[in-house]
Length: 165
Image 1: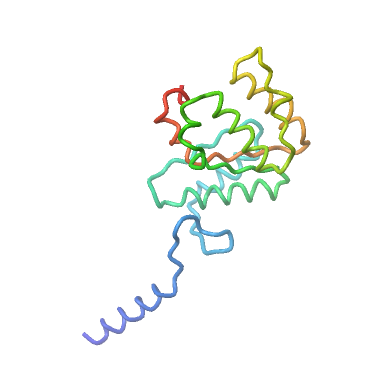
Image 2: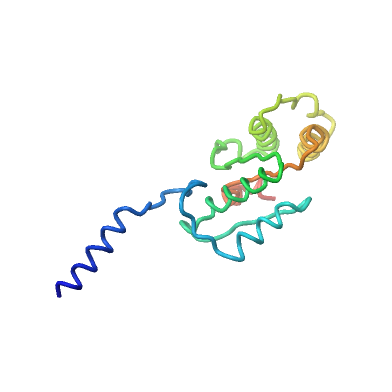
């Protein structure tokens, strides 16, 4: 019985010193890789025009994985921008034109460059085309290095029919 108690005490002591993650695990913390997931994501994110979707139940390391993917892209000389759609006000999510303006402005801010929405938001075309023009003619044209964009909490958009279409 005493041996079992000693083993339990050792385990309990180890648990007390372990980092219990809340949210994402920092890059310098112990992180348990899940091959081949990470290697697939690292290889894929370096390809032009790729879309990676990370989907898993809560508390399974999606945010930590996303941070590591962005870090990997930065190490390969990519410009990176991270945008949480959780930060979009609810009223933005009921109007496509306002949402797309917010998206362009937020990503511009994340890239730490001057916002020039007025130059590209022509009145004669639809908001989706305006957003595409802003990305293609301004954001993407501004850099010689690849751009890796991480959108977090995209599922939030699905509850707003005007945006989700």
